[in-house]
Length: 137
Length: 284
Image (cartoon, rainbow over all chains, first blue to last red; front, side):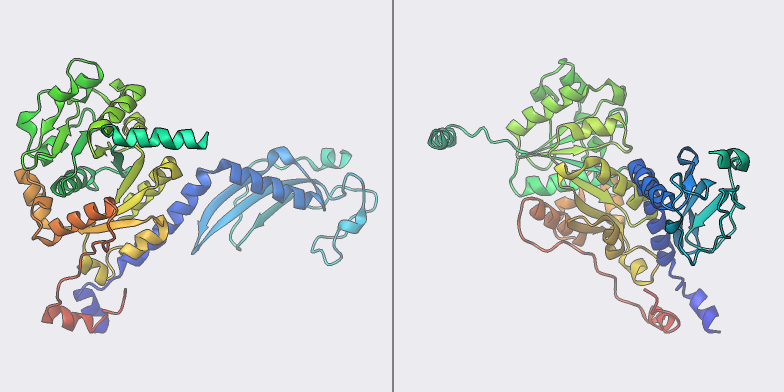
Protein backbone atom coordinates (compact mmCIF):
# COMPACT_ATOMS: atom_id res chain seq x y z
CA UNK A 1 0.00 0.00 0.00
CA UNK A 2 2.73 2.44 1.03
CA UNK A 3 4.78 1.37 -1.99
CA UNK A 4 1.80 2.03 -4.21
CA UNK A 5 1.29 5.50 -2.77
CA UNK A 6 4.99 6.16 -3.07
CA UNK A 7 4.80 5.30 -6.75
CA UNK A 8 1.68 7.37 -7.10
CA UNK A 9 3.43 10.42 -5.73
CA UNK A 10 6.62 9.64 -7.58
CA UNK A 11 9.14 9.54 -4.75
CA UNK A 12 11.62 7.44 -6.64
CA UNK A 13 14.84 9.28 -5.87
CA UNK A 14 16.41 8.94 -9.31
CA UNK A 15 18.91 11.64 -8.41
CA UNK A 16 20.74 9.01 -6.35
CA UNK A 17 21.11 6.92 -9.50
CA UNK A 18 22.32 9.99 -11.39
CA UNK A 19 24.89 10.73 -8.68
CA UNK A 20 26.17 7.17 -8.74
CA UNK A 21 26.45 7.07 -12.52
CA UNK A 22 28.19 10.41 -12.55
CA UNK A 23 30.73 9.23 -9.99
CA UNK A 24 31.64 6.21 -12.12
CA UNK A 25 31.74 7.95 -15.43
CA UNK A 26 34.06 10.60 -14.04
CA UNK A 27 36.39 8.05 -12.46
CA UNK A 28 36.74 6.20 -15.74
CA UNK A 29 37.03 9.49 -17.68
CA UNK A 30 39.82 10.65 -15.43
CA UNK A 31 41.64 7.35 -15.78
CA UNK A 32 41.26 7.46 -19.53
CA UNK A 33 42.58 10.97 -19.63
CA UNK A 34 45.59 10.11 -17.51
CA UNK A 35 47.44 7.31 -19.30
CA UNK A 36 50.58 8.30 -17.42
CA UNK A 37 48.78 7.47 -14.16
CA UNK A 38 48.00 3.97 -15.39
CA UNK A 39 51.59 3.56 -16.60
CA UNK A 40 52.88 4.64 -13.20
CA UNK A 41 50.58 2.16 -11.44
CA UNK A 42 51.65 -0.60 -13.80
CA UNK A 43 55.29 0.18 -13.14
CA UNK A 44 54.84 0.17 -9.39
CA UNK A 45 52.78 -3.03 -9.47
CA UNK A 46 55.45 -4.78 -11.50
CA UNK A 47 58.19 -3.50 -9.23
CA UNK A 48 56.45 -4.95 -6.19
CA UNK A 49 55.65 -8.28 -7.79
CA UNK A 50 59.09 -8.55 -9.32
CA UNK A 51 60.54 -8.65 -5.85
CA UNK A 52 59.04 -12.12 -5.57
CA UNK A 53 58.68 -13.51 -9.07
CA UNK A 54 59.91 -12.76 -12.55
CA UNK A 55 57.17 -11.26 -14.69
CA UNK A 56 56.83 -10.45 -18.36
CA UNK A 57 56.92 -6.67 -18.29
CA UNK A 58 55.92 -6.30 -21.93
CA UNK A 59 52.72 -8.31 -21.67
CA UNK A 60 51.08 -6.66 -18.70
CA UNK A 61 47.48 -5.60 -19.17
CA UNK A 62 45.60 -3.30 -16.88
CA UNK A 63 41.86 -2.79 -17.20
CA UNK A 64 39.18 -1.12 -15.19
CA UNK A 65 35.66 -2.31 -14.83
CA UNK A 66 32.67 -1.60 -12.74
CA UNK A 67 31.87 -4.23 -10.17
CA UNK A 68 28.73 -3.52 -8.20
CA UNK A 69 29.43 -0.36 -6.29
CA UNK A 70 33.18 -0.15 -6.90
CA UNK A 71 35.53 0.42 -9.73
CA UNK A 72 37.87 -2.56 -9.97
CA UNK A 73 41.34 -2.53 -11.38
CA UNK A 74 42.15 -5.79 -13.14
CA UNK A 75 45.78 -6.45 -13.81
CA UNK A 76 46.93 -9.33 -15.94
CA UNK A 77 50.56 -9.99 -15.15
CA UNK A 78 52.17 -13.01 -16.84
CA UNK A 79 54.70 -14.67 -14.55
CA UNK A 80 57.75 -16.04 -16.27
CA UNK A 81 59.43 -17.71 -13.37
CA UNK A 82 58.88 -18.03 -9.67
CA UNK A 83 62.59 -17.87 -8.94
CA UNK A 84 64.03 -14.44 -8.94
CA UNK A 85 66.75 -14.00 -11.53
CA UNK A 86 69.36 -13.81 -8.75
CA UNK A 87 67.82 -16.84 -7.02
CA UNK A 88 67.29 -15.36 -3.56
CA UNK A 89 64.66 -17.51 -1.82
CA UNK A 90 64.37 -15.32 1.27
CA UNK A 91 62.03 -12.89 -0.44
CA UNK A 92 59.31 -15.48 -0.88
CA UNK A 93 57.06 -15.07 2.15
CA UNK A 94 56.70 -18.15 4.30
CA UNK A 95 52.93 -17.88 4.50
CA UNK A 96 52.63 -17.72 0.73
CA UNK A 97 49.56 -19.38 -0.71
CA UNK A 98 51.59 -20.58 -3.65
CA UNK A 99 52.81 -24.18 -3.75
CA UNK A 100 56.41 -24.65 -2.60
CA UNK A 101 58.99 -23.90 -5.23
CA UNK A 102 61.33 -26.55 -6.49
CA UNK A 103 64.92 -25.69 -5.65
CA UNK A 104 66.15 -26.44 -9.15
CA UNK A 105 63.93 -23.79 -10.66
CA UNK A 106 61.44 -26.17 -12.25
CA UNK A 107 58.57 -24.71 -14.27
CA UNK A 108 56.06 -23.06 -11.97
CA UNK A 109 52.73 -24.81 -11.62
CA UNK A 110 50.89 -21.62 -12.56
CA UNK A 111 52.27 -19.31 -15.17
CA UNK A 112 49.52 -16.80 -15.08
CA UNK A 113 48.29 -14.77 -12.25
CA UNK A 114 45.27 -12.61 -12.12
CA UNK A 115 45.16 -9.89 -9.54
CA UNK A 116 42.04 -8.06 -8.69
CA UNK A 117 40.37 -6.18 -5.95
CA UNK A 118 37.13 -8.01 -5.71
CA UNK A 119 36.10 -11.58 -6.24
CA UNK A 120 34.48 -11.92 -9.60
CA UNK A 121 34.83 -14.15 -12.59
CA UNK A 122 38.12 -13.70 -14.33
CA UNK A 123 37.72 -13.55 -18.05
CA UNK A 124 41.25 -14.23 -19.18
CA UNK A 125 42.53 -12.50 -22.28
CA UNK A 126 45.71 -12.89 -24.24
CA UNK A 127 47.90 -15.93 -24.47
CA UNK A 128 49.83 -17.45 -21.64
CA UNK A 129 53.59 -17.60 -21.98
CA UNK A 130 55.03 -21.05 -22.57
CA UNK A 131 56.18 -22.51 -19.26
CA UNK A 132 59.17 -24.32 -20.78
CA UNK A 133 60.75 -21.26 -22.29
CA UNK A 134 59.96 -19.27 -19.19
CA UNK A 135 61.81 -21.70 -16.97
CA UNK A 136 64.73 -21.79 -19.35
CA UNK A 137 65.00 -18.07 -18.76
CA UNK B 1 65.03 50.34 -11.00
CA UNK B 2 62.09 49.89 -8.68
CA UNK B 3 61.61 53.64 -8.46
CA UNK B 4 61.67 54.23 -12.20
CA UNK B 5 58.94 51.66 -12.57
CA UNK B 6 56.75 53.40 -10.03
CA UNK B 7 57.20 56.73 -11.78
CA UNK B 8 56.27 55.17 -15.08
CA UNK B 9 53.15 53.71 -13.54
CA UNK B 10 52.14 57.11 -12.25
CA UNK B 11 52.60 58.66 -15.65
CA UNK B 12 50.42 55.96 -17.14
CA UNK B 13 47.71 56.54 -14.56
CA UNK B 14 47.47 60.22 -15.40
CA UNK B 15 47.25 59.49 -19.14
CA UNK B 16 43.86 58.50 -20.69
CA UNK B 17 43.19 55.03 -19.39
CA UNK B 18 44.62 52.22 -21.52
CA UNK B 19 42.99 49.89 -19.03
CA UNK B 20 41.94 46.56 -20.49
CA UNK B 21 38.49 45.12 -19.93
CA UNK B 22 37.86 41.56 -18.79
CA UNK B 23 37.49 38.88 -21.43
CA UNK B 24 35.31 36.08 -20.11
CA UNK B 25 34.42 32.98 -22.10
CA UNK B 26 31.12 31.23 -21.33
CA UNK B 27 31.48 27.57 -22.06
CA UNK B 28 30.08 24.15 -21.13
CA UNK B 29 31.24 21.44 -23.51
CA UNK B 30 27.73 20.11 -23.91
CA UNK B 31 25.26 21.90 -26.12
CA UNK B 32 21.84 23.10 -25.07
CA UNK B 33 22.63 23.91 -21.45
CA UNK B 34 22.04 27.64 -21.86
CA UNK B 35 25.37 29.23 -22.78
CA UNK B 36 23.80 31.71 -25.18
CA UNK B 37 20.92 32.58 -22.87
CA UNK B 38 23.33 33.07 -19.98
CA UNK B 39 25.66 35.22 -22.12
CA UNK B 40 22.76 37.43 -23.22
CA UNK B 41 21.38 37.80 -19.71
CA UNK B 42 24.69 38.31 -17.95
CA UNK B 43 25.69 40.89 -20.58
CA UNK B 44 22.36 42.68 -20.21
CA UNK B 45 22.69 42.75 -16.42
CA UNK B 46 26.31 43.99 -16.55
CA UNK B 47 25.37 46.75 -19.02
CA UNK B 48 22.47 47.65 -16.75
CA UNK B 49 25.04 48.26 -14.02
CA UNK B 50 26.68 50.84 -16.27
CA UNK B 51 29.55 48.72 -17.57
CA UNK B 52 30.43 48.80 -21.26
CA UNK B 53 29.81 45.29 -22.53
CA UNK B 54 30.36 43.51 -25.83
CA UNK B 55 28.97 40.05 -26.48
CA UNK B 56 30.92 38.01 -29.01
CA UNK B 57 29.12 35.12 -30.64
CA UNK B 58 31.95 32.66 -31.30
CA UNK B 59 29.60 29.96 -32.53
CA UNK B 60 30.57 30.42 -36.17
CA UNK B 61 28.08 28.73 -38.49
CA UNK B 62 25.34 28.58 -35.86
CA UNK B 63 24.62 32.20 -35.04
CA UNK B 64 22.13 32.46 -32.15
CA UNK B 65 23.07 35.25 -29.80
CA UNK B 66 21.51 37.87 -32.10
CA UNK B 67 18.16 36.05 -31.82
CA UNK B 68 18.22 35.87 -28.03
CA UNK B 69 18.99 39.60 -27.91
CA UNK B 70 16.36 40.42 -30.53
CA UNK B 71 19.01 41.93 -32.83
CA UNK B 72 18.85 39.52 -35.76
CA UNK B 73 17.53 42.14 -38.19
CA UNK B 74 20.27 44.62 -37.34
CA UNK B 75 23.29 42.41 -38.01
CA UNK B 76 25.06 43.68 -41.13
CA UNK B 77 28.58 42.39 -40.57
CA UNK B 78 29.97 39.58 -38.50
CA UNK B 79 33.01 38.25 -36.72
CA UNK B 80 34.68 36.88 -39.85
CA UNK B 81 34.12 40.15 -41.74
CA UNK B 82 36.17 41.81 -39.02
CA UNK B 83 38.81 39.09 -38.82
CA UNK B 84 39.22 39.11 -42.60
CA UNK B 85 39.13 42.91 -42.75
CA UNK B 86 36.02 43.29 -44.85
CA UNK B 87 34.45 45.44 -42.16
CA UNK B 88 35.75 47.59 -39.35
CA UNK B 89 34.92 46.81 -35.76
CA UNK B 90 32.68 49.90 -35.61
CA UNK B 91 30.71 48.72 -38.60
CA UNK B 92 30.26 45.24 -37.18
CA UNK B 93 29.31 46.09 -33.60
CA UNK B 94 25.53 46.04 -33.24
CA UNK B 95 24.20 48.30 -30.47
CA UNK B 96 21.79 46.63 -28.06
CA UNK B 97 18.10 47.46 -28.07
CA UNK B 98 17.77 48.31 -24.42
CA UNK B 99 21.12 49.69 -23.36
CA UNK B 100 23.62 52.03 -24.94
CA UNK B 101 26.34 50.13 -23.08
CA UNK B 102 25.66 46.77 -24.71
CA UNK B 103 27.01 45.68 -28.11
CA UNK B 104 26.93 42.47 -30.10
CA UNK B 105 29.51 41.07 -32.47
CA UNK B 106 27.58 38.38 -34.34
CA UNK B 107 28.97 35.12 -35.65
CA UNK B 108 29.15 34.38 -39.35
CA UNK B 109 26.27 32.16 -40.31
CA UNK B 110 27.50 30.92 -43.68
CA UNK B 111 31.00 29.97 -42.59
CA UNK B 112 32.63 27.23 -40.57
CA UNK B 113 34.44 27.21 -37.28
CA UNK B 114 37.65 26.13 -38.99
CA UNK B 115 37.65 29.37 -40.99
CA UNK B 116 38.63 31.32 -37.89
CA UNK B 117 42.32 31.87 -37.30
CA UNK B 118 43.19 31.52 -33.65
CA UNK B 119 45.82 34.28 -33.64
CA UNK B 120 43.45 36.74 -35.30
CA UNK B 121 40.70 35.90 -32.83
CA UNK B 122 43.12 36.55 -29.99
CA UNK B 123 44.05 39.94 -31.44
CA UNK B 124 40.39 40.85 -31.93
CA UNK B 125 39.50 40.07 -28.33
CA UNK B 126 42.42 42.18 -27.18
CA UNK B 127 41.24 45.16 -29.23
CA UNK B 128 37.74 44.70 -27.78
CA UNK B 129 39.20 44.70 -24.29
CA UNK B 130 40.68 48.11 -25.03
CA UNK B 131 37.20 49.47 -25.73
CA UNK B 132 34.93 47.59 -23.32
CA UNK B 133 34.82 46.76 -19.63
CA UNK B 134 33.55 43.26 -20.36
CA UNK B 135 34.04 41.07 -23.40
CA UNK B 136 31.73 38.06 -23.00
CA UNK B 137 32.48 35.28 -25.46
CA UNK B 138 29.69 32.82 -26.19
CA UNK B 139 31.57 29.60 -26.89
CA UNK B 140 30.26 26.91 -29.24
CA UNK B 141 29.51 23.44 -27.87
CA UNK B 142 32.26 20.88 -28.24
CA UNK B 143 35.96 20.97 -27.51
CA UNK B 144 37.35 21.29 -31.01
CA UNK B 145 38.77 24.27 -32.87
CA UNK B 146 35.64 26.37 -32.27
CA UNK B 147 36.15 25.96 -28.53
CA UNK B 148 39.86 26.68 -28.77
CA UNK B 149 39.25 29.84 -30.77
CA UNK B 150 36.58 31.08 -28.36
CA UNK B 151 38.89 30.49 -25.44
CA UNK B 152 42.03 31.87 -27.11
CA UNK B 153 41.56 35.51 -26.23
CA UNK B 154 39.80 35.01 -22.91
CA UNK B 155 41.37 35.41 -19.52
CA UNK B 156 38.55 34.06 -17.40
CA UNK B 157 35.87 31.43 -17.84
CA UNK B 158 32.33 30.91 -16.66
CA UNK B 159 31.15 27.34 -17.11
CA UNK B 160 27.46 26.63 -17.47
CA UNK B 161 26.15 23.32 -16.20
CA UNK B 162 22.70 21.82 -15.88
CA UNK B 163 21.96 19.26 -13.15
CA UNK B 164 22.35 16.31 -15.50
CA UNK B 165 24.94 13.54 -15.64
CA UNK B 166 26.00 14.34 -19.22
CA UNK B 167 26.31 18.07 -18.59
CA UNK B 168 28.38 17.62 -15.43
CA UNK B 169 30.63 15.16 -17.20
CA UNK B 170 31.23 17.58 -20.07
CA UNK B 171 31.89 20.50 -17.75
CA UNK B 172 34.38 18.35 -15.88
CA UNK B 173 36.16 17.70 -19.17
CA UNK B 174 36.10 21.35 -20.22
CA UNK B 175 37.44 22.49 -16.87
CA UNK B 176 40.24 19.98 -17.29
CA UNK B 177 41.03 21.44 -20.71
CA UNK B 178 40.89 25.02 -19.45
CA UNK B 179 43.33 24.43 -16.64
CA UNK B 180 43.89 26.87 -13.83
CA UNK B 181 44.67 29.91 -15.96
CA UNK B 182 41.00 30.77 -16.49
CA UNK B 183 39.92 30.41 -12.86
CA UNK B 184 36.59 28.93 -14.01
CA UNK B 185 33.47 29.86 -12.08
CA UNK B 186 30.22 27.96 -12.20
CA UNK B 187 26.66 28.84 -13.12
CA UNK B 188 24.16 26.05 -12.61
CA UNK B 189 21.31 26.48 -15.06
CA UNK B 190 17.86 24.93 -15.39
CA UNK B 191 17.56 23.77 -11.81
CA UNK B 192 14.11 22.63 -10.75
CA UNK B 193 14.04 23.02 -6.98
CA UNK B 194 10.87 20.98 -6.59
CA UNK B 195 12.42 18.03 -8.38
CA UNK B 196 15.55 18.33 -6.26
CA UNK B 197 13.39 18.29 -3.17
CA UNK B 198 11.75 15.08 -4.34
CA UNK B 199 15.11 13.50 -5.04
CA UNK B 200 14.52 13.44 -8.76
CA UNK B 201 17.21 15.87 -9.82
CA UNK B 202 20.83 16.37 -8.89
CA UNK B 203 21.09 19.18 -6.37
CA UNK B 204 23.48 22.13 -6.46
CA UNK B 205 25.52 20.36 -3.80
CA UNK B 206 25.59 17.11 -5.79
CA UNK B 207 26.88 18.93 -8.86
CA UNK B 208 29.46 20.98 -7.07
CA UNK B 209 30.64 18.11 -4.89
CA UNK B 210 32.04 16.83 -8.17
CA UNK B 211 33.03 20.01 -9.97
CA UNK B 212 34.25 21.93 -6.92
CA UNK B 213 34.15 25.31 -8.59
CA UNK B 214 33.39 28.74 -7.15
CA UNK B 215 29.63 29.08 -7.59
CA UNK B 216 28.43 32.32 -9.19
CA UNK B 217 24.80 31.40 -8.94
CA UNK B 218 21.94 29.10 -9.80
CA UNK B 219 19.21 29.82 -12.35
CA UNK B 220 15.88 28.03 -12.14
CA UNK B 221 14.26 26.34 -15.11
CA UNK B 222 11.54 28.90 -15.68
CA UNK B 223 9.00 29.05 -18.52
CA UNK B 224 9.63 32.81 -18.46
CA UNK B 225 13.05 32.22 -20.01
CA UNK B 226 11.47 30.55 -23.02
CA UNK B 227 8.94 33.33 -23.36
CA UNK B 228 11.55 36.09 -23.18
CA UNK B 229 13.78 34.25 -25.65
CA UNK B 230 10.82 34.01 -28.02
CA UNK B 231 10.51 37.76 -27.81
CA UNK B 232 14.22 38.48 -28.03
CA UNK B 233 14.22 40.34 -24.74
CA UNK B 234 16.51 38.82 -22.12
CA UNK B 235 14.86 38.22 -18.77
CA UNK B 236 17.61 40.21 -17.08
CA UNK B 237 15.77 43.31 -18.32
CA UNK B 238 13.11 42.50 -15.75
CA UNK B 239 14.80 42.83 -12.41
CA UNK B 240 11.48 42.37 -10.65
CA UNK B 241 11.25 38.70 -11.63
CA UNK B 242 13.13 36.14 -9.50
CA UNK B 243 15.16 34.92 -12.47
CA UNK B 244 15.89 38.44 -13.70
CA UNK B 245 17.09 39.30 -10.21
CA UNK B 246 19.20 36.15 -10.16
CA UNK B 247 21.02 37.26 -13.33
CA UNK B 248 21.64 40.63 -11.72
CA UNK B 249 23.07 38.97 -8.63
CA UNK B 250 25.37 36.90 -10.83
CA UNK B 251 26.45 40.08 -12.64
CA UNK B 252 27.18 41.74 -9.31
CA UNK B 253 29.28 38.78 -8.26
CA UNK B 254 31.17 38.84 -11.57
CA UNK B 255 31.83 42.53 -10.92
CA UNK B 256 33.35 41.55 -7.59
CA UNK B 257 30.50 42.56 -5.29
CA UNK B 258 30.03 40.49 -2.19
CA UNK B 259 26.41 39.46 -2.67
CA UNK B 260 25.10 35.93 -2.00
CA UNK B 261 24.92 33.52 -4.94
CA UNK B 262 21.32 33.43 -6.18
CA UNK B 263 19.59 30.18 -5.33
CA UNK B 264 16.06 29.38 -6.52
CA UNK B 265 13.71 28.21 -3.78
CA UNK B 266 11.27 25.34 -4.08
CA UNK B 267 7.66 26.35 -4.49
CA UNK B 268 5.32 26.01 -1.53
CA UNK B 269 4.01 22.48 -1.20
CA UNK B 270 0.36 21.91 -1.91
CA UNK B 271 -1.83 19.85 0.37
CA UNK B 272 -1.81 16.97 -2.10
CA UNK B 273 1.99 16.98 -2.21
CA UNK B 274 2.13 17.12 1.55
CA UNK B 275 -0.06 14.01 1.74
CA UNK B 276 2.21 12.39 -0.81
CA UNK B 277 5.31 13.25 1.19
CA UNK B 278 3.95 11.23 4.09
CA UNK B 279 4.58 8.18 1.97
CA UNK B 280 8.16 8.73 1.03
CA UNK B 281 9.16 12.36 1.13
CA UNK B 282 12.23 11.58 3.18
CA UNK B 283 14.28 10.50 0.21
CA UNK B 284 16.60 13.36 -0.60
